[in-house]
Length: 290
Image 1 (cartoon, one colour):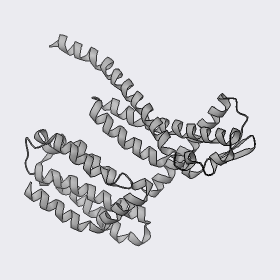
Image 2 (cartoon, helix red, strand yellow):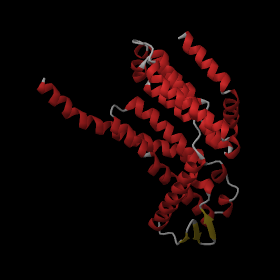
Image 3 (spheres, helix red, strand yellow):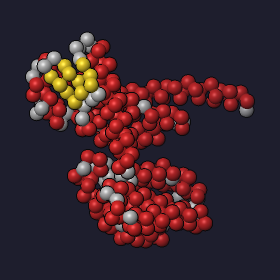
Image 4 (cartoon, helix red, strand yellow):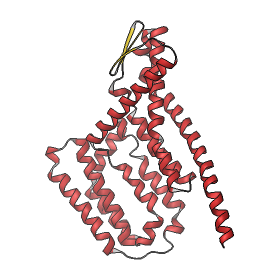
C-alpha cells in the first residue's frame, strides 16, 4: 500500500499541470462538470469492496509493464503533439495516459486477481478522460438529427401545422432552429455515467447493464424532443419570449434532465424484471441438474 501511495503521489506531481487544467474546466465547462466526482465515486466503490479486493494480492509487474508502457507512450505523444492539438484533445491524451498509469500501477503492486475484483472502480476512472473533439462533434450531430426527427413526429402527432427544413421548424408565426445547444450533450454524458453506476449497483447481468447504457441515447433524444416541442409550442401559442429569454429555454434543462432520469429509472426497473425472468428458469434448471 505504501509503495502504491508513493506511486500515486508521483503521478500527481507528474500530471499537476493537466490535472489543474481539468479542475479549472470542471467549474467552467458543462462538458467537464463531472470530472471532480469521478475519483470520489471510484474511491467509494473501492472502500465498499476493499475486503474483497485486497483479500489476495501480489506483485504482477510482468502484466503491468505493457500497460504502463502504453501510458508512457500516450503521455509522450500528447506532449510532443501539444502544439498541434486543441486544448480538449491534449487533455484527453493526458488523462488517458494517467488512466493507463493508474490501472497498470494497481496491477503491478496488487496483482491481476485484485484487479479483477476492482475492475469496476478502476475502469470507471476512464470518465476523467475528456471525449475527443471529433467524437463530441459526431455525437452532437447524431443527437441533433435524432432530436429534430422525433420533434417533427411529435408535432405531427399533436396536429400542429409545421413545415420542416432541416433543423428549422416553421410554426404559425414562428420559426425555430434546433441549434447545437439543443443537442443535450451535457445531460447525455451525465445520464450515461449514471446508467453505468446504476447498472453496476442494481443489475446482475452483463447484457442487462449494456442494454441500460444503450437506452440512454433514445431517452436523451426523446427528452430533447419534448423540450424542443414544449418551448416551441409555448412560443407559438402563448408568447414568443418563451423561445428568447424564458427560464425554460435558458436554464430549464434540469427539468427535462429529471424527466430523462425518471424514464431511465423505469427502464432500470424493467431490466430488473427481465433479469429475474431470464435467470429464474436457469437457476431452477441448475438446481435440478445438481
